[in-house]
Length: 112
Image (cartoon, rainbow, N blue to C red; front, side, top):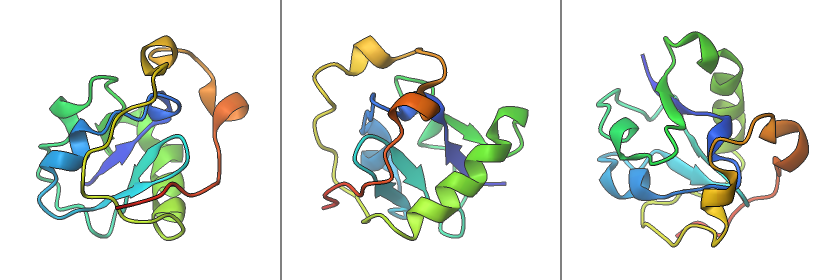
């Protein structure tokens, strides 16, 4: 089992999870983070740190499409291991439905 970042991270991009990850398996997109499934050690410390509740184990039914998205973009986006500020409007997007179709960006973030 590994952990994956799901849709609620889009436009929220809280980075509390990055700071606690012991193996630095987070990768930064323009408006969300992903976890590299081959690097995640299933420790689970990231899940409770996410204020948006956007990190779930891949055993959750809601994670199926997100495992592929995490795997793909973790190979395209830069690694991030240092917490940065979240977007100023992050709270406005927390809990918004169907963010993937409207807001997901394939563009890479800055990384560390």
